[in-house]
Amino acid sequence: MKVVQEAETINTDNFFEGDDTLRLILEEHLKGPFLEYAKRELSLFGEQCANAIDARAKHTDREGEPRLIRYDKFGEEVSDVWVNEGYRNTVQETYDTGIVGYVHKEIPELGHKGNYTYSFAQGYLLSHAEPGFYCPVTLTMATAYMLDHYADEYVKSLFLNNVCSTGEVPLYEGATFLTERQGGSDVGANVVKAVKDGDQYRLYGEKYFASNAGMAGVAMVLARIEGAQDGSRGLTLFAVPWRQEDGKLNGLRIRRLKDKLGVRAVPSGEVEFDGALAYVVGDPSKGFYYMMEALNLSRICNAVASVGIMRRALLESTAYATRRNAFGRRLTDYPMVQDTLGKLAARLHVEVATVFDFIKLYERVTEGAASEREKVLNRLFIALIKKETAEQAIHFAHEAIEMHGGNGYIEDFVTPRLLRDAQVLTVWEGTANILGLELIRLVNKFEAHKLFIDEMRNRLVVVSDTESKKALLVKLTNLSTDLSAFAGYDNALQTFEAKGLMKRMAHLYESVVALEFAMKHGGKFEKLAEVYIEDTWSLRKVGEEMKTVAYFDQII
Image (cartoon, rainbow, N blue to C red; front, side, top):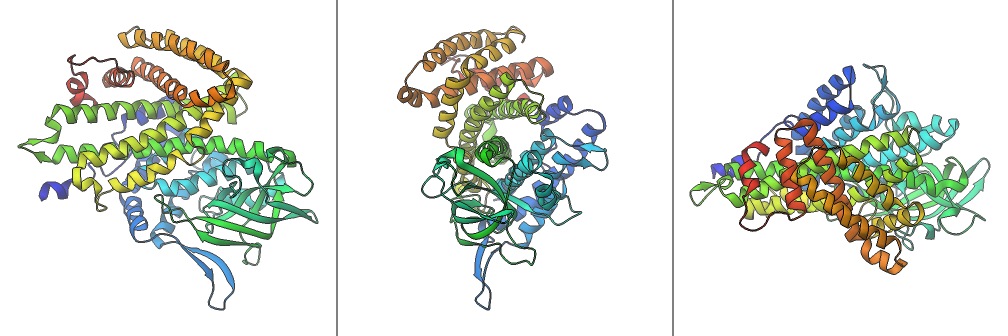
């Protein structure tokens, strides 16, 4: 009994401490006072996530889900969403760290803005405990991005300071409402209508998957101005406040909240607009483009949430296996368990390193410093790694349940919630099929496959010569041949082959990052790279040396 009780508690009280991969990434990307500030604040936030935020997340998931209050006691429609007090505390404490705000405004202590690397590091830690709430954070980041980059000064003055609040003004969480019943991922089929009313517009219609409904202070909504062309090119982006200045609803209502498999912390609903006051954001003809730019940001957040779940699953698995005795031995004394945990550790390290690798490129794009080639690679890397990390998050959650045995299926442990929360990540911001269509567009329009192969070859050539490098050069040649053929296929065959090629491309990219990281930092990272590459590409033959087992004590 004592063993099981001990195993319920993770083996660290701080999700930041002990994460050598993240620490080295920060030391490479951040410098001077900003680095020291980030380390200090991430340590504080990592402790908060591992304790108070994690405890609140469990309560919200099991007992304190959001609830819709349609009417007040006088029968007036209010469409309020009730959330428990612990969740409200998590909301305020998280935004006060600057997870959104400091991307767009100065950190007072430093006198300059933060950046996405720091924000995504915060999101990674948060997702160890509460990936559901990281969805509203993501939506707020996307809202801030669109307001900051595309809105005029008047619209910015209405919303941006509140969306970027770190406690000095009331917080407006954000939301992005795209999906309608008849369209789903086919956003161009949207029919929500925008009717001119003086200098502004009024919206009429329905959005079917509206996450953060009732909690958002402002929503970014795609709608079609009367007389605009059909399809995605006729959509305009609007900023829609949830309430009017007098506190009453802004011509909208929540029909119902969705009863979801996981991420129960975030209220997702069906929202009807009936004359909601709306403000045009940017060029009325570029609404879809603006939202797709924000979607790329959201896809990065999706990948960040995925690796957060992956690390939590590994930490829980390792803690349990270290303490659990079976048949007279600790679980970690068995080579099959060492192999499982070692491969998970290698994959986690490589995927975290890869996510933050393309975040560097994303920052160049958002700063306006990227070339056209880099912009294409940015879109490609985001699609590849969003897909791969989401699928791996489910795999890690599954392995954590299996490592716990029967206990892993019991809701007293975090493992069932990890699996339920991970499953949404393959759906949010584009399923594998939608991401496959993105690959097809990038290849057909920009010859992205050639850019990818050149980028991987150039980076692979300069890493240290190893057996792993030799194997990857062969894989690169084979992939280059297959991608060239793919570019010439008809549309039907391209859609059939896209997802399989994306996995191979993601694995090659991750393998290159693994070798680069190993060359820079040596030690256990060389072993992690070797284990990852052998496992991913099935290079070890039956009966060969069990390298994962041999390295176990060094990489776990």
